Image (cartoon, rainbow, N blue to C red; front, side, top):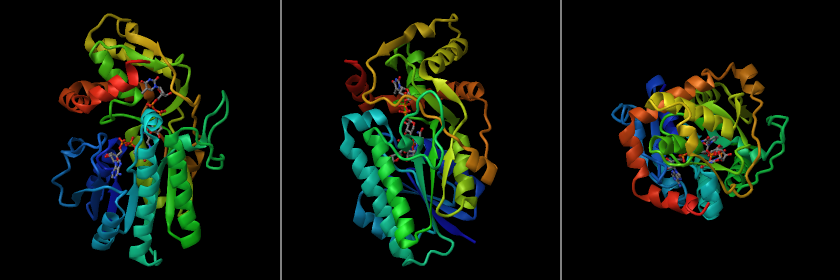
Length: 351
Ligand code: NAD
Ligand code: TDX
């Protein structure tokens, strides 16, 4: 049976991997990719699948209430996988409002439109909301975030994502909207915009520019290969229990400075530089305001219930990611020209 699936934010980093997977793996679905094409959205992330008969791109803004209502009335989507968001913590510190509009108002508009078209008759329907581990706050040296950890968001970004999670649960509870939520740790891989740590460092190392490490580089993140996240999303969309939350993580904690040193060694090798050459670019800069110390995910629920597990060893995944950025020089050039230069200046010049 044909299903109409709306994926929001499908031209972004994670969204493009989810769109590619769903379009190629499920020819019986029609995948609609709704994206505003902000600085982070790029149709070049999807050139390999753009001509598939079961794929349609729609340019639009989830904050535009009337547009969203009409879109849902026109297409009557059976399922929604909602990834569209403002996603960079540093930008949420310089411009919080953009995060409130896109992440909170945008999510509510989608929930309202989904509820409206099915008139509270939701058999075989699903609204899947993609969220982050950052809603749980910051950990000390020990412990893990579970699905029961109390929310404690500490940046405008994580507060806006926490708010959207609460609204999704409220619609489930109040209107019986069939929803599911997943909260994932830091992703890395191909097509990530070079404002995030790993692609920013790859681009700078390649161009012999300093690598800005915030504070002392002691903050810890749990890294997951983006394709493993896309596989988890596929599984949860098809087999997840309605009303549930699933944590997704790599079981792969790295101090920022250790990760950057590993990346420098890999880049020395790939670029034919003398061992230790790229590490000389490491520069400690002013810390991020309110910088969360540690994130670590307990993903035993999705592992035990749905049989998901991360598939790629981190060093191998990082090597593959470096290869991708080195092979896709034009992609990197395109996204780092123009507005990126101003962003970089604003964020890093006086740090
Ligand atoms: P991204 O910034 O790369 O992509 C976001 C996409 O959403 C872009 O294509 C952008 O154009 C689109 N978008 C933004 N505002 C929009 C609007 N108002 N209307 C329509 N489209 C809009 O982000 P990402 O890293 O791919 O993250 C995707 C989702 O996953 C987000 O919800 C994020 O919170 C979540 N998440 C990300 C990570 C991570 O490590 N990157 C980890 C956990 C969860
Ligand atoms: O230039 C930098 N220097 C630096 O030291 C940048 C951009 C980051 N950092 C540090 C801050 C973090 O401790 O590296 C770590 C990772 O930073 P980001 O790549 O900005 O990711 P983070 O803030 O951890 O948030 C990410 O993971 C959760 C994503 O951006 C979110 O969208 C996701 O929800």
